Image 1 (spheres, rainbow, N blue to C red):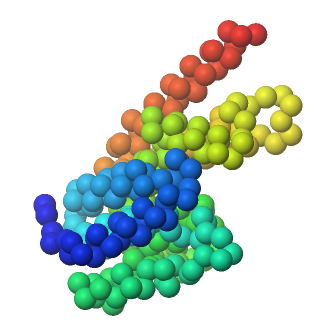
Image 2 (tube, rainbow, N blue to C red):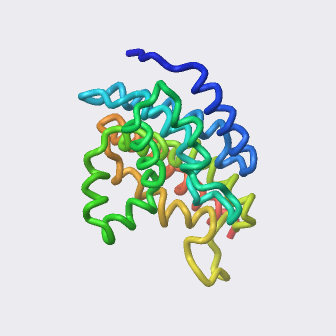
Length: 220
């Protein structure tokens, strides 16, 4: 399934995202965004009915421009994207939906909404464009790619790679991140494609952690 992509809009959008993501470590770089964009479209095309693919692709492109990676001097998301989302190929409702999706993609925001904002949570459970992007972003966080991204992020943050007895708080190492968060991701997928692929990638992480433990024990 194809759809008409406004080339000028996507050229400018990609320029903006490439420039923004160049500021971050390899766990949140342009290749990550591009993988999420392509996977979100793939997921969306398996859904019935098919969501708005233009919204899905742009929301996926912009998904890491949210304030979780911004600084105190960063422009608000709506300001940063205003010249793109006012493009004539987008309706006001499409632009509004893209801006609504972006801050609601993350695993952390979903956990927060389930307990603090029932109305917003109802919207989260019923927006297919959000679900396509959420599942794509979460799939890129797990499996073999997820293992590489955890290592990259941990290195950038100076985080220990493995849990040890000297650590006061569990879950702050790369290894701990799997146990605290990534092994739970498969249970929060929204689409049929996402659930099936998450099971496969989950097993990759389980196997990796088992191998890691064997190698740790062999050094004792």
